[in-house]
Length: 179
Ligand SMILES: [Fe+2]
Image 1 (cartoon, rainbow, N blue to C red):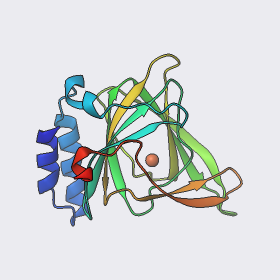
Image 2 (cartoon, rainbow, N blue to C red):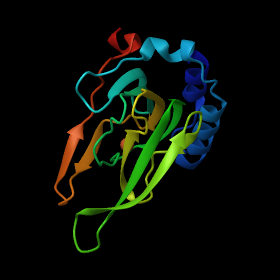
Image 3 (tube, rainbow, N blue to C red):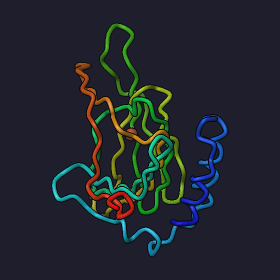
Image 4 (tube, rainbow, N blue to C red):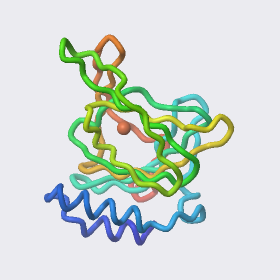
């Protein structure tokens, strides 16, 4: 993980086009080894998934390990000001894309994709909103997410179009952040 962090520290985040290209390549290059991320692994008992902080560099990026129980998923949301990419480290995630209806603020289900282990996917939804879910009925899934700038807020939306901006929090904070 330290090697990845060193690479993230030299990305020019002020140039989003190049930053996305570099980030995609670095996540592709990241060697998925459970020994490397086990220290950040944590499952929530009750919530849809567990967001575990690996690193936050204020104003630039943050990195989180998401842990999903079987079939757990999050709600339909966007990422406000942040873009992001993620790599599936264990299992397989489903992603639903949602688009805003032209006649109002509500969203409609547009498409589903599957992201398999060791694949990298963009979190910058072209359709506006998305949700992720563990595809498995009986095994946990783990994914590594990088957001720039650090993901602080998401807009959640229900099927009637009711929106709610929520500050994001971590289930576990990194030791680095606590110091
Ligand atoms: Fe998301």
